[in-house]
Length: 138
Image (cartoon, rainbow, N blue to C red; front, side, top):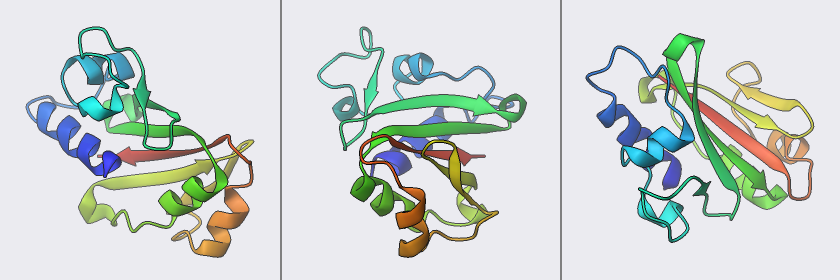
């Protein structure tokens, strides 16, 4: 899947760095962390936008002084949001720091709100086509 591939690629490419400080969408593209199918036909030298499998955009960034990097899938429809939210992304052993659903503000947060059940995801993914999910990884 796209999230796992991007996580693996960023970790590999940053393995000799002390943290993820400074990573952006543009940098992730330029260093080859983004699979070509997510570049919407653009090359890594000209691409500026990442597209997810649901035709929304993807942002890459960092938080906590670079302690974690973020992957945010934007413009998700309800069904895509629910589907992604209920996947078992692993616990701390997978490097997952946290995950959140954003629909007019944060509507669900892991680990604070526990694992996203179908009912939790249905409530959290409340917008027709403009939900976002952000994953934070160590």
